[in-house]
Length: 51
Ligand SMILES: [Zn+2]
Image (cartoon, rainbow, N blue to C red; front, side):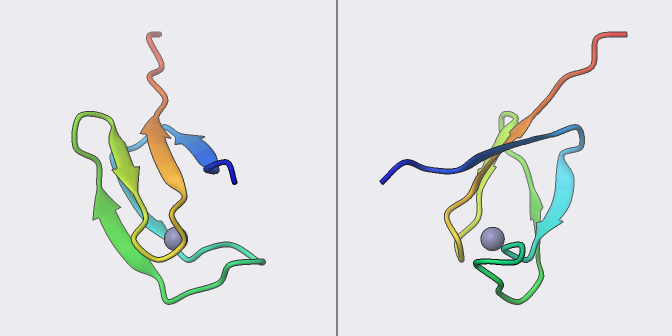
């Protein structure tokens, strides 16, 4: 089972699990550019825009 990884461009975000893994909306703040949702285990990674 591979972990789903989602790249986003802000450190504060929320996860609601999307359509398949829906769960209550939870807000997270990344630590060191990463955060893993405790509900659905999706890993969020900060996508830096250098420009
Ligand atoms: Zn989630």
